[in-house]
Length: 181
Image 1: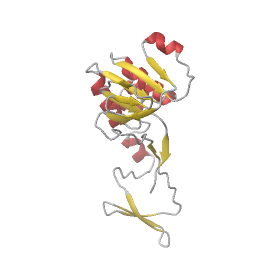
Image 2: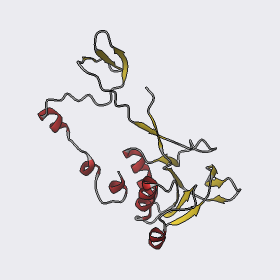
Image 3: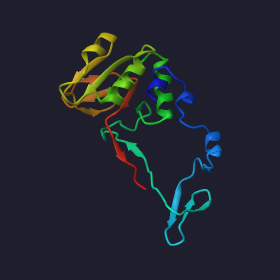
Image 4: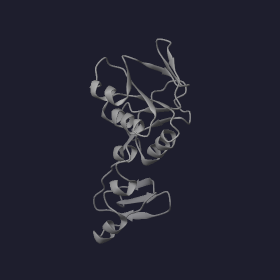
């Protein structure tokens, strides 16, 4: 998704296999279904759309969910993670309005989000809990960094030490947790 956010690729460019590939490979693809029941005795899975499928072997690949820091404001509309294409579209919409962005998390994903938001002209600040980061080269490109800053709330953004910073978009790129079935 980082190349899409940075404007280097389109969504179609990053899709690994199109629907034709699944057909050609003899794979039946059910998109948009949620498995609601697994009958191990009958070796069947049941989807929320009424489909029942038989299996010989079942692999559960539940994916992951982004970790959102549970601070006041973390559920506001201008606060997103960087986990799916909808997040990318939200960030691109904000970026094209030339607003201020704060990216919480200075890991690879956070830095990729910051770079992607910087390219269309957003003012971007990366907030990182630790005191070190590979930031010198990125500061030359226009990113701002706040090190050893612990987020306490999102209204713009408020830090634990009481400082505040205005932000039109807040991206939380602070990790993932396994998806719960």
